[in-house]
Figure (cartoon, rainbow, N blue to C red):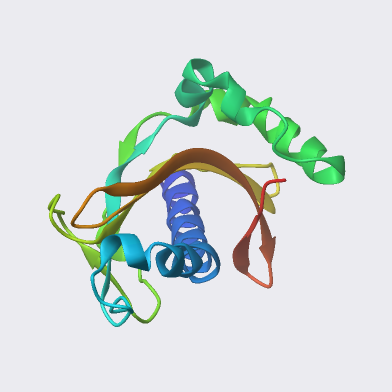
Length: 178
């Protein structure tokens, strides 16, 4: 039983790593450029040392759904919606409990540096994750993120959103919501 659980948790770390890197690459840098005038007196933000805070706590996704059911409604359409709903309605979805993990296992892409703590007076991105729930074949998964981007002046952006992920070529790719 232990090795099965360990395998599940190892795959969770892989999902979090793949998601974080692809999300930062596709979504964050664009946001960063859009907010450069707000956060920096310089014309260009320093993108050589972007600070990322990842919470070491994985929250139970079923608890989040119970408290904020509206987050899980209408995120996907067509076949993606069917996959998303099947995972939401799975037995495993309700069984996943809170757990801590070693966030130093998350290896970030170039220019992104994970920080252990953050200060209100610095630029950083904060990401908190729920537990990852997989389908039976571990080909699809759902994770909820809480994303915050702050700069030395104020909290610029923040949201919570569940994402469907698909395993493609041994990497987890998130499917953007509609």
